[in-house]
Image (cartoon, rainbow, N blue to C red):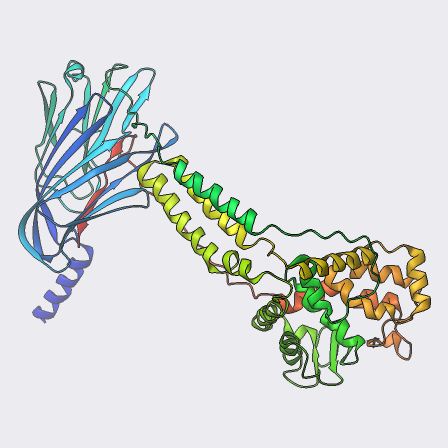
Length: 558
């Protein structure tokens, strides 16, 4: 019974004992020396003697670099970091600089001393009353006791006469206590020593005010960029070569073309007229297949569990085998489950197939007789994208690591220029330029067709609307084009039916066709991407000692 009680007591003590550090070490001695320079920066030397209670790889020292001083966000710069006689790694992130000391392959035990040096810039507070040095020499983020600490601040001779008006505090964040420290003045120096151990999360802060001009505001040396001519010349060379190599023969077409071109499907016409694969180019296959008798489309009410005003697409016959692959990819995707499908079935499920259709259509339109393949190989393969990535990396390095901002920006512009060239219009052959001019003439005709011309064509050829609608869809004019013909045409295309109850037994009108079949909505059904699940995140950044100032932080073992 006694043994069981002891075990329970020890367990509860391990959980609830106050102030007991979970770290595997204590700081036996903490020696800090700071040397202030008149030019507005100072050097810090820290000697941290620790005693490990169990084997560890080493310690880490974390120093905040982002603060809020007088209501303003401020950032200091810590550089020239060195650790004597130990391996270390430095990381600048999360508003702090972390120095990880030790070897992942080696453990240390017992007493070990770590010696760290670093230089601090932009850590003085300047205002009209003077210059303030306010530094948290020992931060409140050490979760271990510090048995003894000694601190020395050395200032330049012109500042030594103003050291008497200093303030030093010790304790938890926000404390103004001086109970655990003693301080004294020396020649151009302030010496501080602890008189009692500092508990976990207790620190030491020193503040000194100097008259204006005693300490200068640090100005980073200006870097003269002598290398900007190199990326500038490369940029001029790239665009000069592109302009010379890619000069396109212009063809002006005065002839009005009112009939679709022979030998090209509407999807291919839509892609070639603007040198782009648009989603509407692909959706133009729906009215084209309907006009040729391969499919039938119905606007239906709630049926088989589908929502109101769904579209029912029925296969009447297979596509001819000689049709291009992109059409077979689309057709087989539509009827993968049988000889009919509902448009709503494809939402969030057709994305991969749609991308394959775009790829196949691009291959069909990229014809050697229409495009200059040698030009395409130079400017529209992976080379320009690779140049963009390389220039982006080099530009960032030039600016961030070497302060060569002009050279860096010109290098990035060079990369962006390469990306623009990659996505620019490919150079065409003479045959390709002539064909595009003819397609643009046909496009202009459909867009600006006079009412009297619409009436004449509707009367001359009752099927003209069905024949040309796929091209109007590919050009993006289907809505206005349908409205134009609705004035002179009563019934919808033969391949479209409205099966609403109030329309039973009646032939579908052009108005019902226009209302029920909105090609932009059809496109959305095939191209919709399922939204990713939302998530929330939060974060925080480091801050300084209570009341303002810089430095501080803490550390731990690893």
